[in-house]
Length: 140
Image (cartoon, rainbow, N blue to C red; front, side, top):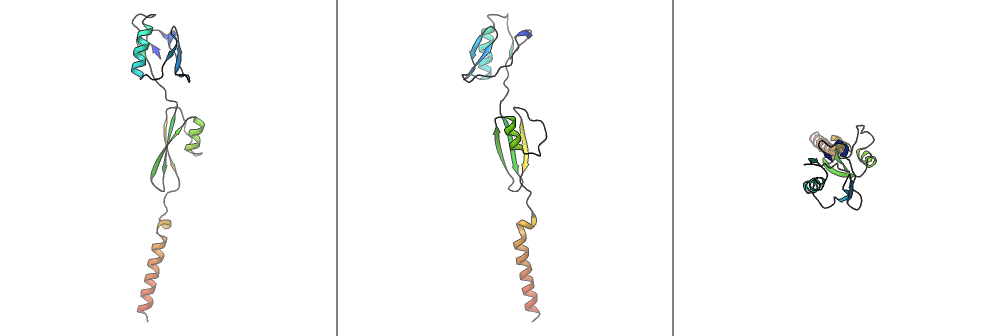
């Protein structure tokens, strides 16, 4: 949260498990259950008791990291919610070397690309057997 022209009152807070944060002059205030706009309006009203016409900027930094795993073989993507950077690195895989921060959305490829031979070996062998059978029948 920033109060314009009040640099000494700028603060970065983590919402406590009970849904509150501690702010200068105001002490502990309830943040849980309010939208950003509602919370900003509430704080503006409260800080107006201490600061002349306060202009607040309230921002939220997400504490999750989303990892989109695109499976190359099935061409299906699955979204995983990582609660820590360590968990996000595990979802991203050991080949992922970019920096990971809270609030990021990371897309990684997983699995192996489909192999043409793996998907079509039965058709090739069946076709070859049919051709050999026809050639053998015609040569008799």
